[in-house]
Image (cartoon, rainbow, N blue to C red):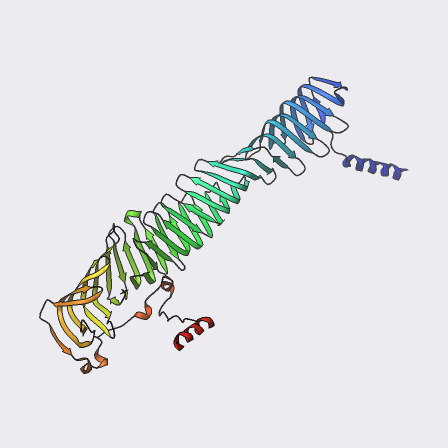
Length: 522
């Protein structure tokens, strides 16, 4: 008998727990029924108070369908879910079986971290998920978020906003196609075309992360940062708004629109307030001039100062290239305000058919026209120019001073311990007549059409002229002569080669070989 009673009790308990909780009207000024318009329903009027699955609801009027456990409430509806969520609206429907609610009419929902405003809101109390499909505004202590459609996951405090998303902050406005935003942390995950417009910058990306409270962001797809006079592109961009700091990784392009300069590399950092940047890992600075561009490479490139007073530094394995001049040194310093470029540690300059070396080289350009003005070589100055047919014209001294016209050397002065070795040719036949070796402490050289045309010795010289047959090959080079042609970058790609540049082999196809054979046969 006792076993039977226990069995019945367990079944009754099981059935009780299997049923949904009934919506209960706890208070109303009036209760009535209207079978014609609301069959099987209880109508509550005035100061209605209802308990709904652990939540409470207040309104002016409520219609409760007891059999279906279904509620309609209207008139200053207030829904409280514990102490965490308060929602107000003009109207709400709640299905006690599915635990789904639909609210509309000036819907405002608040929890501990945000306030949501919309016209129509769906609420799944099982998954604790909100849905809106007709625009909503979400405001927390940092930002105001707007989107046409979206979801809010109450347990995760996460907004999944879609379609015309806008985050407004006192410092910027963010627009995106889709983002996930966490109201408790202020972190946003961006998907699709996104822009962030601030007071000093504009950012574009198609995938990224933004910590809106810390003002730190990371962008990874088609991203760039745009300032008033600079643009930074990279496969991966990091940006700290408070520090005005940005870094970029892989395939970096930093464009300076004022000085027409482009920095490339695989890692870079930029400090906006100091207007300084450095680039490493296959770093190159490209400066656009009137006719062509100059390419400068170093293991590290450093740019500091405002555009009109910018200093450019390159460190270690430095090479630069432009069609009419190239160079190499260990380190380089350039002042864009004065147009002065300094080359340190075994510097060498190459012109079309010449080479200049010394312990220190200064190259001065006009900052406005960007044309070469003068050249200074201090200590062990050595100028080598290939003869038109064979050998080398050589001039050396302690110091060298050169002047340019239209980017071509016009005059050169050597001061101290001067020596010259020149090939003397007939002007008409170009036949080698003699080779002259002269010493003089000071002399002046004139160039014409990029060739040495006159050497004027300003102090008593001492020298001798030799017939070509009388001067042995082994003394046709002055002391410390080094022809560094195999270090010379002949293309913009060569600036990345360290040490000796090997001659490039030309591979011919079978078709081109046959064509050459036919030409030879003819």
